[in-house]
Length: 200
Length: 175
Image (tube, rainbow over all chains, first blue to last red; front, side, top):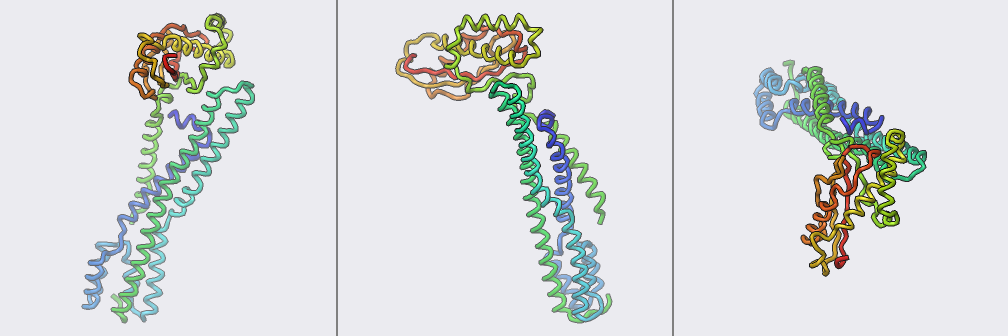
């Protein structure tokens, strides 16, 4: 408890941000790892079923393995012209991507704000240390060093929060982009291979 | 998709991880013993030589005598601490050639030790933090520090907390 008690008032908001950031990182990690886009083999199987006019089986396969993307595939396989299906798939895809993108902004904000909050804590600590030093009228290196290391605790804490947040944000953003690209490619492939679809 | 339970579980996990982090924090020795007094390493021994050892002893004793009234005076406490540290360093300096001066004529080096001073003035936990580069000098310095253990009595004004002191024992051609 010592480090936190000695870190000054800014350590507590940093602690709150840290708790939230770790929770978001863990939650997003779970979501991204459990909602993977259908693999290449599975897409080949889906395409094969679609070519053999087994749309219900294809949708069932998607629902069983990657239920998160069922809406997207259903939109691609609805009745209508390729243009209409593309538009529906676009709406469904955007909805899925929005869902995946949730709370990523929070991580980006945390990665930016945490070092600044830490720096603010350090500045506040330095002001306090120098103020005490000035009031004591006696230059004591231990008093100054004590004040400085305590003040630097918040900068350390801020950086300790920001670095994992930034790394997690970049990784999650990359996964998001990969999913978006895979959806785009799949939509183009299905619309190209199955130009006209009946209601499944 | 059951998003809310996932988020709730992650918040619980995060709270638990931070709880552990808070209780595991404070690995350094200085934090483990909050009462321990740390004396800076660059507290120059040379600057203290102007103060006569006997005079220092008197001052320390006087400070101890006025323990009750001065306990809350940080300036006097700091002053007593400085004087005490000066006495300890002086005592080590006077005993730095242990067991004898012979054999050190051609050696130069500075050995830095960290010692923890107990309430009775004895030295515990003598650790070499920077070697002089010569095992003989390091050993001689350690023996010198041991010889100075308990020689200087701690003034009451600085309290009974363990006092961690960094001492650099300097050797230049057996000087």
